[in-house]
Amino acid sequence: MTLLLPALQSPTGPAASREAVRFGALSLTYGELAAASTALAARIADASRVAVWATPTAETVIAVAAALRAGVPAVPLNPRTGEAELAHILADSEPTAVLAGPDDALPPALEKLRRVTVDARAFERTEDHPAVEADPEAPALIVYTSGTTGPPKGAVLPRRAIAASLDALEDAWGWTGDDVLVHALPLFHVHGLILGVLGPLRRGGSLRHLGKFSVEGVARELESGGTMLFGVPTMYHRLAEVLDAQGGGDAERGELAKALAGARLLVSGSAALPVHDHERIAAATGRRVIERYGMTETLMNTGIRADGVPRPGTVGPPLAGVELRLVEEDGTVLTGPEAIGEIQVRGPNLFSGYLNRPDTTAAAHTADGWFRTGDVGTVDEDGYVTIVGRKATDLIKSGGYKIGAGEIENVLLGHPGVREAAVTGEADPDLGERVVAWVVAADPGSPPRAEELADHVAGQLAPHKRPRTVHFLDALPRNDLGKIMKRSLHAG
Image 1 (cartoon, rainbow, N blue to C red):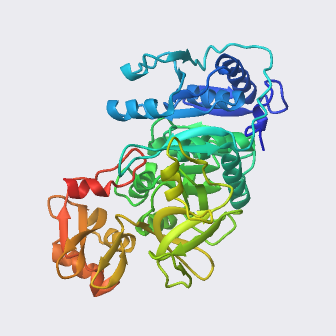
Image 2 (cartoon, rainbow, N blue to C red):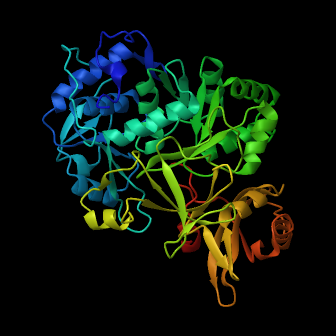
Image 3 (cartoon, helix red, strand yellow):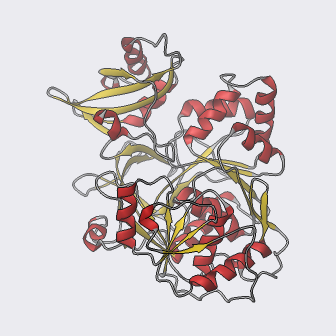
């Protein structure tokens, strides 16, 4: 349990010659990554916490591996974070050093910290430095949430939670040391860092990081040995556009379809993948994208199994060790496939709490240890979970009905005149809330009529789910992980 990355235990171990990570032309074997992280671990062993300037580079991988080896909690920093938010994170987490690449230009907020340079091309080779036998409950990472209702909160992720989640995914996906994972996710968040870096390293497999997402990069790496692809809906949407002849030529489309069809597993996460994109990818490749559901505080909760039945629009059943239930606003536990309520979870995958916020931590849990996710969903007869959306932004109460924004968005995206869509609720004196659609037209010069879209939804779903207002936009506001920032829609 304490050795999160057993393949990195020794620079001369049995896996030393296997490729561990590749970033562009730079490749590190397990022996080289073990040597680099061992040397760095010795340099930071006296730190209480370290910040990691989490660029999409091999230096970030070395830095995090070294922190885990030294038993020093690491705080991944998004290099695009603004000054005020960065200052808050540093004041809250109080790191004593920052780990950064040799060419990284750090902002003034980090100048007071001791800088420890990490160089993947010129690392020091020292004698083996034994990994710290840390307690399973010891903090491994402190990952800051997006802070939709205030400044970001630091979720303390113990070694126990990381190991439990990654091992549950090993079981669900048949993840082995023979797998080669391809992705272009940022390395300051759970998806890209824990699943996308620590996942393959815990299995003894390989990671090929694209640096920046591109259709060509995905096709190239999958064609040359990649077995798994991780992405967010924005990435899969771009792949679907090429496959559906909306971009690129016949040669590019054919190469991409062949590459995706040859992958063992295509996984989407961090937000719901629209059913329309599911279907376009499946039609072109014969391969279904599977989804999973997790949060910073809980890591992974559910996932479609590799040997299970893919069901577009669902995120699968709970993973091994995870308990999940639906709860009404008054605390009543709901059952049955028609029930819709807040998702609550508990299990070994949960975080320890919010750093420096015991009251917030307590409020986020029930008295018997269930974590209140704030997400709303349903559970079918087979235990498959469907996420309706966030309780605060995606559950619309209109005319006595509970309406999930996600199902309306999927129907809108099935209309040929719609490229992107988001649905929110807006106060209404008669209905309580009315359904509002925010649409990016496929042809901005000739968008579909609002009435046409409303009738399309009413015909596919039900009259009470019809958008009462339709706004046309040039683009939807998204964060670094491709999630639509719905609060920004009304603010704009």
